[in-house]
Image (tube, rainbow, N blue to C red):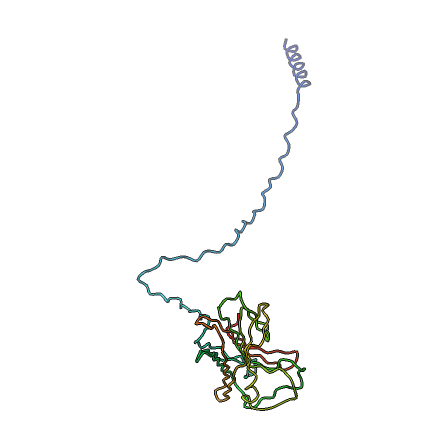
Length: 252
């Protein structure tokens, strides 16, 4: 019995051993991996608004200075218009002031220049016959209406003028030197605008030069001038045929 018992036990053990299913060994775990720490993202720069503070009523403050704008000149009858000197112009056409007045039915226009020579040369050889050489004058908008009248032919400027009173020399002979009063005493003309806006001579005016005060006064009978008539003053000079130098006061 003892032998058979152990024989059965061994046989049973053999049978159980042959039928045993062996499970595969567990996989070898991978080595652990710790990711490198990431740098924090820098937030975009923003401008910090300047702090605002409530107005302290009791505190004193420096007020912003008020700069008053220079009003435009009043270019009407009886007014004196001031013009700053222009160093780029010859003194005899650099207008410093202009004044108008009516007396005895005549218009008087006085231009004060930066400088006036005692002697002047006109009809210079550098100019062609009939060319404009030098002029002083005023364009007059009698009704102060830019829609009527014409422009100033000598300087191709302005608009709306019924009359032009000017002392001008247009080359018509040989070079001549003399006193300003002598050279221009018979060269003042009042021009009137026609319906087509061209100008033609209406009548002769008068010329007076005062070199001591550097002033030129033009006068003539001009009809229809009122308190609000508009005046545009000018002076022009041609050093050469292809070069024109001009000063204007109250231009528009």
